[in-house]
Image (cartoon, rainbow, N blue to C red; front, side):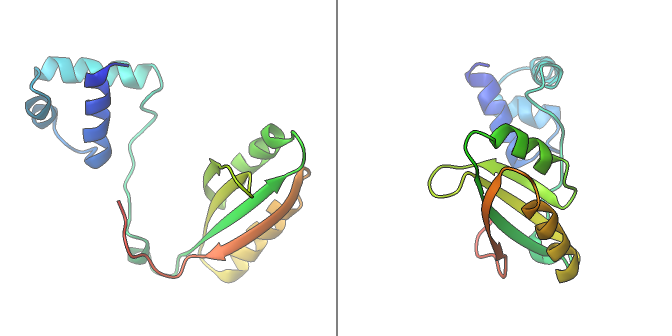
Length: 141
């Protein structure tokens, strides 16, 4: 991946709906170059899809929580595999510091959130968790 690919990805992160013509103009390359590079990035698995980012308060009755997770010993891979299968987890991140993993959880009710937390805590290899519920956003990218 070269500098042009990096610039293209940065533009797509900002606006994945930007037209090929707009991207080409901003990058000062041909539309064909942009089309070919996007296709190559998709085919190689660098771009795995496109999504919509929603402002958290735009989805009524949605609860977002962050679960910090400590993993026992060297069981991170198996714990991650189990967490990836949990439908309530919408994001999973490897971290440094006190916690090994950070899971983003979204649910439509406190009971649903409690159910997700209970299932996660039962996963073998998880030594401890701490969960914080998202109350308000002050800045989003």
